[in-house]
Image (cartoon, rainbow, N blue to C red; front, side, top):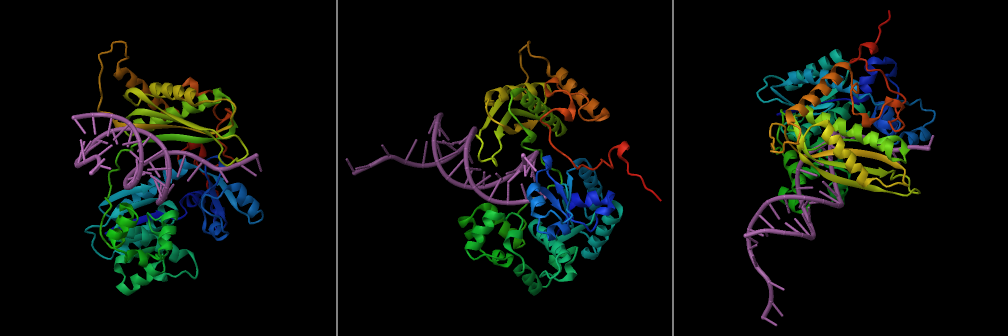
Length: 434
DNA sequence: TCTGGGGTCCTAGGACCC
DNA sequence: TCTGGGGTCCTAGGACCC
């Protein structure tokens, strides 16, 4: 038996903890460059604001609705997530942190009333962190996700098809068969974890509209008609465990840093700064998970939304002399890649560095080449870099090729409405007034 | 009358997730 | 003026091997 706990409108809820005046108002959090909505309060959803809807369209559509837009403050959300996750871990013997605002908890062997237990935990998360959350309980991960969806909907929409009893905490396993069928019948196939817009369309074209329709399909037929992925989803819905519970997260298979620019870039020097910085950040992430990369991919492209402009997109993958997490080696190769893909005459909108072909840092191919700088020295250098930046703040020490001038560099992203790092910066501690 | 069988690796594209 | 970032897995097709 599994529980799936997730924070409601997580980013917005984190912001509201430190700005109670935002409660009851339509609030959205924007992606990098203040591009589009990536989190919406219930009030914003009620206004018809869609996930990933561009901010300039929202503003044009709802000029007088009082929508509050905030720039993403991932430092704050990450810290609030840690707090929520450490409380959620108390629900059962093992936890899988699935995303910044969601985790699965294995409930195997937990005695007593699971709904009462989950509800007590939910109240504790709200009281101790200020973030509201919902919990779904069921025999498989896919069903637990579905239960969580039901719990959320039962709370949110007046006139929704779900009984109030399932509000905030929903245990599908505790429902009598007839009631379970009614809940599955009332839920569209698109709400199932793993069924996206395309599959949903294809399923509906074959008369599969509700989760009840989906769960009654024959897995072998589904495999032939769709794929093994959809087959697994159907089996999971039928109560058969098909997805592994990953309480220790497997190492990433690739690590990337990619970003759209605040203003389009038309010359090579600012691109070199950006690619140098992205490569350094990616190398840092690589060291955080104790991996080495064997290949570096660099890409640049123009803005695909600007139909009238000349389009250009190019990427190149280069192999490192040998797998490494060394910032110097990775930056150097990324810059070489950039020179290969760069063509003048275009407005470059986005660039990125992706580290591929990762392996464990403990595996190392040594060489007899005496000219090659000994690896231990290079490792010490990167380690010192990380220690300095950890102690004195990100960006304290960085590659000169990434440019100087911080946010004044022309290409950095736009973030107009960012709230302070309330929980991770002494200077930003909120003050309480009587 | 008419071109094997079994396998690996790589890449591109498609679909999904938050 | 103006449209995110970071991932995963699966499949098909081509190149290549013996």
